[in-house]
Image 1 (spheres, rainbow, N blue to C red):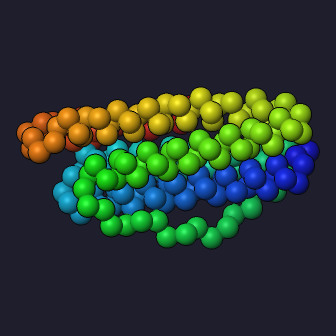
Image 2 (cartoon, rainbow, N blue to C red):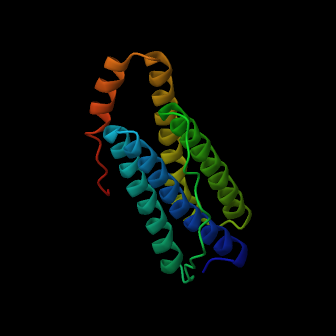
Length: 166
């Protein structure tokens, strides 16, 4: 059984994962509105991954005798000045998620809840990948600059991205 503080923090994180999916769909919509379907696909796949993360936490809460509780989600940012801005915002969002998982880990360590520590380690490893991925895309976009031909090729590559649950 999860203690009250950890249960509340896990529920908060579960809801934040669904908010992240919501935010990535807003980024996808911006990309689609600018006729960047490949970049939109990238964010749609990213949203699927965040929903998967939310469901993973949902299952864990209920498997440990808790009750996964949903809250209202705030409206995500919907206006962006560029594709690069969406990736910078995505990186900032992932950095915030990493801090949230560090906080969850601290609570679990304080409570000596070893099952939750083990569970959270998967997310910590995942966050290293997530931040690195966004940093790489930002580097690429900065390198591409105003080169429309290279941007076109890059977008076509991102159009092939898929997300499959593990």
